[in-house]
Figure (tube, rainbow, N blue to C red):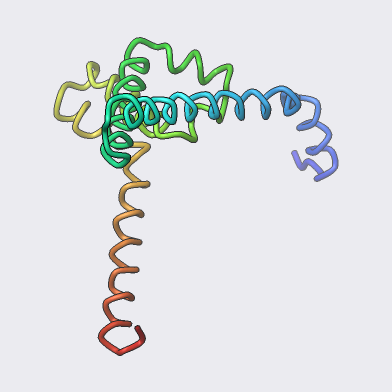
Length: 151
């Protein structure tokens, strides 16, 4: 059966779920902003009231946000939040922690080696891989530019 492009487009428009961008975009913005505001508030509290240096406070807050995100992923709370908040939960550092923790939780089916060892980086693996390769490539260009006297 041959379907024309126009008929296919009509069928797709009838079956595709309608986007609720008017609701999803502001909710994602508010959720991501709230997560970042919590982090910035924590940094402010550590620097102003506890006397911690800015870089140290930022490191501790990042570690805390990742830990809370991993625990919330394990308890199933992060998925519920992500269902309602959408991309607002993916953008901050907590989204990266969720993308590493959620596949790792499914290791029970295949065991420690093939489950946890293989699944932990299914989503985050390409990000890490391309980040390392790109930084290596740019470092090589930087080294070559210095060697050639470009800077």
